[in-house]
Image: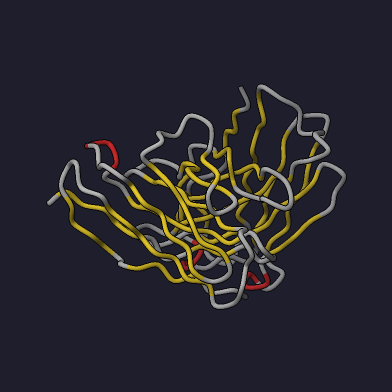
Length: 121
Length: 107
């Protein structure tokens, strides 16, 4: 059974870089059909899609993040990662790593448990 | 970007009630819409994809319908475990976007 697990610092200072990693277990990140990605949710607010990546390196980003986000994949470790820089207090949120079912349906069918990231000095 | 608007933002209902939540897209998205259930402190869980297809393991009291710009999620007979927040998401085009959520509370 495919599972996702986020890891990374829970506290980041303003203007610095938020770095998160998602480890895929119970399956391979090399599936030709799937995109892997990140979604965030500020406490008490709605969901925002950040970015998605295919194991081949093909990526999609949310333009609202204005090029601050970088998503990457490490096939040897069965992991994918997110970097967001520079961060502000507005980036404080729960961050979830996710798997997309594949076009054209493209629903997020697998989610990590989520990790809270606070941006504060 | 395609804007997704859910209504109502919150609803109170009783066990056994039938509840319908609406999601409207700012432009046509064919049938590329998903619904998620989120309980406090937990990640969202996929319920419905492609507007009306039930995700494996999801009880049949959940159903979805619609196409184009208007979609509905219906829970036919509320159970205690259904009280949660529900989100819709369009998968027609990037950037994928979500509705603001509908909180389903116990009356």
